[in-house]
Length: 231
Image (cartoon, rainbow, N blue to C red; front, side, top):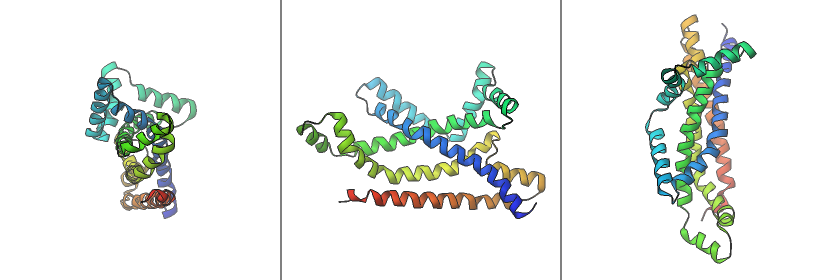
């Protein structure tokens, strides 16, 4: 295979990596907010339940979470949920890995929602209590105070830790390889096994570096846009 043929082959896998990345962000960023509110709730059972859930998800390796979501339905209920999804989508639309990708997306969305929830919670709780009190003195409701006074300040404070998690996410997509999803590392391993080519495995690093470089530039611009909050 020529260099360009190998590049196109790896790009097919990187497209799967980007799909996992994009869908995870679309689901986990909004999902993290209600989890954060539950963790800050004054209703102690809900707060405890949320904190325990977040502790478990953050404490268990993501790869193990992928295994649990993919294999446990078959072990517990004797029903190969994601395997059947794989077969159905392949027979219906000719698309490979649909069930496995779905399992990966569920694991990634839950995992990153919990991480984002802690970032949200830290950002919200970092706002000085006096700002809430000042809003109440002005006759604003709690919702208005949050939207008009707190929210933009929270966004400013959470952008750096959020950017770190987002950059980590694109690299974590390689973990989908553990259940044989054809992301870029799996594609490179296929070349190693079938063509005895090892260098494409190292070449995959270029794809990640370029993607992370673009993300770094984007987040740098976002931070500049929010610099009007600097004291």
